[in-house]
View (cartoon, chains in turn yellow, purple):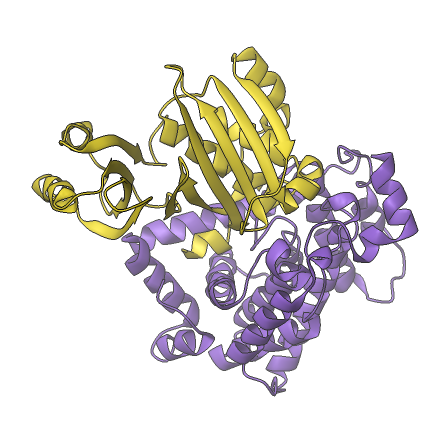
Length: 222
Length: 282
C-alpha cells in the first residue's frame, strides 16, 4: 500500500470500494485474460450483493472489463457500451464461502472459447486483491508486474521458472506457491520489480510442465 | 511502506519536517524521485480544487435523493457557526453531493469521505493566504497518518463502519490542519488521535445502500471535528490515549460491529421506516 492508495485515486463516485475498486477488478480481469472477454458472468457477494446496484458496482466491473479506468466518465453507461462492443454480461448475487464482504466472482469467456474464473475483493480506498484464479488460491494486487504460472506439481519447476527470470534480469519482489494436491496442479504467483518481456513470458510458457503462463501489468494496455 | 505506526512517523520526523519524512518514504517505497512524488500529490490537490469548482447545484444523483443542498447552505444568512465554518460546511456538502452525482472527486481516503479534506483545506487556504506548496505538504501529512490507519485498522466502511471512512478522513484532516498552522509532529498526532476518539464506533448505515443519506452530511461532521481537534492540539491539549492505541481501538471496534452496521444498508438509518420506504421506492 502506497500513500497514493490513501490520498487518491481521482475517480468517478460514489464509492471507492464499490465503484472505483470494482472498475479495477474488471480491469485486472481483462488484463489477466489478455483481451476483452466475449462474455462475463459476474457474481456479487456480501456488501457487493446488498448495495452493488445502488453504488453502480455492476456497471463499474463491466466498465473495467471494457478497459476503462476508475476516472472514466462513461462508467455509468457501461452496460450499453458492452452491448455495442459485443460482450455478453450476466450479473447475479450469491454467497461465497469465507469471502471478504466486497467480493466478486467472475467467469470470463475468452474469444477462443476457453473460460477463466477469478475471485477478487475490493479492500477499501479503491485497492483490490485477486484471491483465486481458476479455483486455485493466488493472492496479489496487481501493483507490480505479476506472473501467474500454472504447472504440474513436481520437483524443479520453481528452479526453472526462477532461472528464466534471472536470465532476463528480473528481480522477484514476492512469491507464492499453491497446489490442489500433491503431484496435481500448482500455481506460482510471482511479483517482479520490472516489467517482463514477451520473450520471457514465452520462454516460461514453453517450459516442460507449465500448463499456462499469465502475465499482468496494469501499466500496459490490454 | 515503512510506517507501521504513528510513532514510527514521529521518529522519522525527528530530523526533518513530517511531510518530508512521508515523501521520502514514498520515494523509497515506489522507487521514484521526490519530484515524481510531489508532482503526483500536486495533481491530487488540483483535482481536489476542481471537485469543488465543478459542483453543479442543479445536478441530482441517479436516484434523485441528493443534490442542491450545498448551494443552500452556502448562501444561508447569519449562521451560528460564522462565515468560516459555514464555508467549511458548504464545501463538505458540495464535494459529497458531487460524488453522489457520479462526479469526479479525490478519494481521501475514500469517495464517501471525499468531502472532508477539501472542506477544511480550501477555506483555510483562502482565509490565511496559504501557498499551494503548503497545501500539498498538508496532503503528505494526511496521507502518512492515513497509511497507518489503513494498515492497523481499516479505511473501508464495509469492514470498519463509518469511523473507518469519515473517521479516518477526519483524523487525517486534523493532522494536516496542524501542519497548515505550523504545529509540531506531536501536535499532529494528538489532533489525529482526538479526532478519531470522537468518531469511534460510528456506524455505516447508508439508506438504500447509497452513499447519500447520511454520508454527505457526515462529511460536514468529519470536517468540523477535524478543525476542533486541530485547535485543541495546538492549544496544548493532549489526547490522553496515544494515537497508535486509538487506531488499534478503532480496529477492534470495527471488528465488533455487526454486519448490519457495516455498509450493508440493513441497519441504523437504513432500517428506519422511512429509510426502508426510500429503499423500496428505488
